[in-house]
Image 1: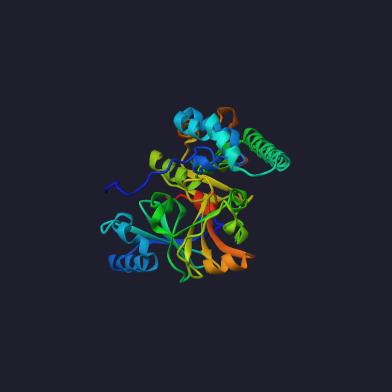
Image 2: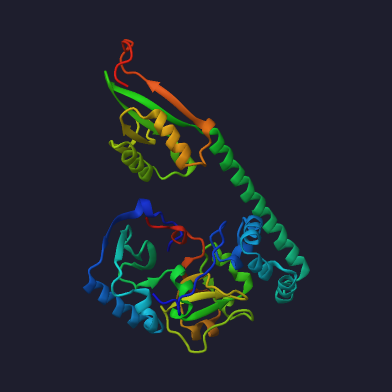
Length: 193
Length: 182
């Protein structure tokens, strides 16, 4: 492929738009930080002193209007920040549950709930687990109507480690391991696993 | 059109397209967008494996290597996506909006005529008929911020100067923009 006519466009890592449009994004500050750390020249071109004075000359808004506009922008930004904070809090308070469910005496499945809150693609992860442990793995709805990953076999410890390795965004403290037994009788001794 | 769009929910199937069909698409594209002619080999290489993703509401996406290049609604013209337009800025005729309009366009508003005729805005010198697919540029910006369809011819926009001039199809950071195939 020749790169003669094809243009490559830089996209902001925060809002995903070309950096020149970041000023209209609600996460404007974050965008600026990102740009200045990754592409200082580009940042200078867009946000440097020269650019700002030029921009001021371009905008024919009266001062009054400009102030109003700034206030509106400020509001939108604080809203966005609040939203992000809320999301983060939700993430921190939610738990990932790795559950070992007994099917009969010595066979069990491991179910993982709550991964989707951390932005993990369940389908892919299920496939990954299945490949990794050489067993069946799928995404299914549990009785509460939530999606969960079901892996055939007892892999709760391994899955814990794998999640930590593959998805560092999931904090370790939020992962819980639970064992669920079907029968009322206690399983006699350690059979198998 | 893509204000609400969720690929996972709407996708009903994807399959690779036969090469004869790809040929058809190529000629259609060149027909619709004469400006695209010189680039067509680069955009749709003969050997590339074009994938057609069918979605609800008669929306079809065309992708190569997991990059969505075109979309089509029912039997409307096949339209390049904004990402493709950024790579090949000249495949569509340009219209330019003024600075004040940018923020509305970025939230998905259709473009009103005054936004296309004011001092900061630009319309092409050659008049464009109704239903032309255009790239929406912005005052003082390098890249396109949206793709739209003209609701009036450019002459009408200049004379009437009221109401919707461009119907927005795709804009920056809309759900389709954020969609990635995998």
